[in-house]
Image (cartoon, rainbow over all chains, first blue to last red; front, side):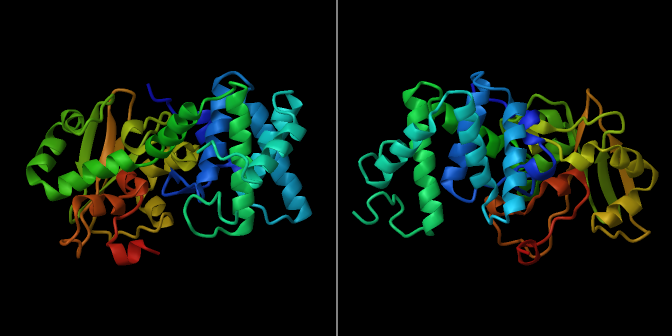
Length: 112
Length: 207
């Protein structure tokens, strides 16, 4: 059974609104779709409430705007998601940094 | 090692590849902790990509443009005709734009909308302003959407309800005789199926 899109997620407004074209979601790169999917999956699995993530995302966007960072919507989304996972004690930032290094070094290549 | 983890065989801009690796690392950690499965992520991405947009409705419109018998069935019994293409779950009436007649869909009470065909409704569709003005001054509303219809064109308003939803069958644009059904479907926008836009031929649609 395919998941039914949630209006709470699809209908986010203001700065948090999902990038779209002709009403469809736009993922400019494959990783943007992956991070979107992981975040939605985690909210389905009761890892957190969607509004908790949304609050974090809005804060991240506001921070980036204030600092004048040219980062993209989904880059900000990624940092907001990482922060939420760290706050919830679900993913330790150090573990993520190490794992990222493993991928950069080519020691791992096992996910999509 | 350079390019070893570049699955597409070409060079990305550096920041994108760094972000891509970081997202892969994160997915691998979440999967390892059994917090998500990669299959669940696949299903979510495809559900949001497919179901949120107007893909399904566009396929229905393109079929009606290329197959006059299908178009007839669609206008006679929309619910049965969309089931032929595998779409359902909604009682549907399709209303056809033609020379001298333009159709516009609204839900004055709430936000009834043919989700199965055109995804989730845009924010403006649910706004009080659209819901009230579409009925009172449709010509002005259409003008604000960039559709300037001559006074001679009759505008028909269709008020959706929980029982019956409406879909506009836009006019097939001129100069599209050589296009395939799939290419035609790409010209059909969500807004055209609500009635707040016209369907344009490929050259101007590429804007």
